[in-house]
Image (cartoon, rainbow, N blue to C red; front, side, top):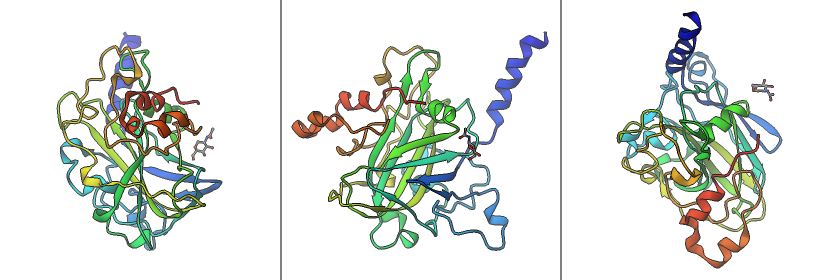
Length: 286
Ligand SMILES: *[C@@H]1O[C@H](CO)[C@@H](O)[C@H](O)[C@H]1NC(C)=O
């Protein structure tokens, strides 16, 4: 009897576990702090950190996908700019560590950049225009639900690593890192969005300034990647379409190796092609 109810108890307790925020950022070789909503608001002098401030995010919960047009979607609930900046060279990696992430949450991992001009610590978030540099959905179809990118993040000590495109013009950028939980996404409005923003100073000799879109225009409530039933058997990783705008053509593949150059030079339209989705859906090395 005990043996049969134990998995049920484990399942139920995972459902009520806290959600998550990014509490640690490794940019290049240096470690920076994220904002901790359960701690910083109670400190007389909270530290200035590169992660954006979300003092009203005590429950560490999501923005539901019926609110993708609300400014809260930009950098999470009532977010204001982080007061410190993490530095990274274009072409280098940034790793973001979530505080324990519930296994019942399954979905893609995404990353965007937005140029913030002179100073990210004072930027108006509604003026930021984001371009996508990373987006990974299903990484292994085995199992029901299948293995999603956020399962790989959990296996990697709750850490996701993104490569800053080598060709990006140096400057001040907001990195918008995000996971989307699809466990209740069968109906429109049920996907849970967890955006987290980090101020970056990107150094290097790149020249590209990709065009982006305002945060409130990244998604629509009915996007196929936000209305999706994960509880079935899938044939291919590409059966799930990562939501959001087309990938920046200079984005590195999910494992940090350069994208196959032929695909991009020959055909600019390939940004939105299924080929690129597959490239970004391949298994994440642990
Ligand atoms: C996992 O993350 C924790 C918290 O940042 C850290 O203390 C620990 O060393 C990490 N473990 C591994 C195996 O990297």
